[in-house]
Length: 386
Image 1 (cartoon, rainbow, N blue to C red):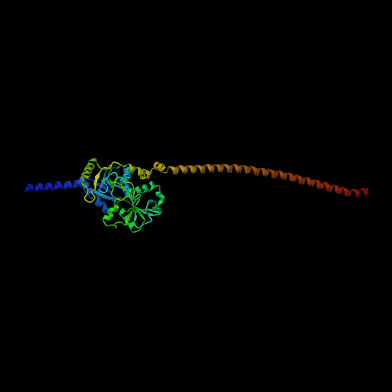
Image 2 (spheres, rainbow, N blue to C red; image 1 turned 30 degrees about the vertical axis):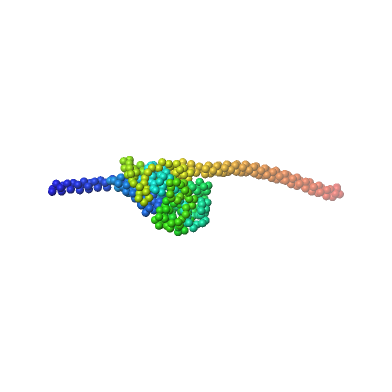
């Protein structure tokens, strides 16, 4: 009996020490971009989170939801080790933080990992005045963030590809920093005219009864093989799992093995695989000139605004040259006027001298005349007296 008690005490002590040791291990931090709302995100990535939690054991897994803006800031500050985000947002994040893209998630409606995500332009079905991209002119638009890939950049790129100016097309573009489900509700409630969302979200909300089926229509709808959700733009890689350099290679390998062996989900048949074609996504980011917006150095600004700098420097040079010419012309004219004034003053002095001489001569002449008159008047009396 004594030995049994000793064994039990040893096991309890070992378990307590193991638990204490596990608590000392740093947790693995997983960031999930909350584009679709926490309810849809949790349902869609629940199996993924459970698989990662088992793969990183005995370390704890801490899951944090971010919006697009905060997600990029958190990546730069190394606030997470793993991330699940759209392909475009992941590209922006990896450029800014040095992370690496690993796996792509697909499902039965988006079976091609290279073409599993797109942007959608939704309006109310009763809006007969909005039927194409040109009809968006002067309309109010709601987006979750200007950093959202499918929910902003992909749509703006499509508008630009159609020959329209996305910066001058709309009356206003409001970044709400809310999940895209809220944007859809704003359109249904007539709070805004248009919303940009990611593909398959509209179908999920209709299937869940969040919005009436058919109450919204898709503008610039496209048809593609192996893609079974309504969309308004070309297709890009789906959502991506990425890893920061803060995660060790052994833990990362366990995570990737666990996710690649994870069976397809029951609801949508989603599973993780590998995407191989990022060319269209990179071309879009380069065309929209947003890939390096997070690193706004002097070199980036000189390159991004180079034509503005060239035009501004040219205008400044013209202003300086014009000022120098005007200053030279004014100085020359002033010198000419000074010389003219001196000449006029000299002429005045000469005229004054001549006038004084004339006056002196006239005085002398007057004295001579008076003297002659006096002499003439005195001549006769003096003659008579003599």
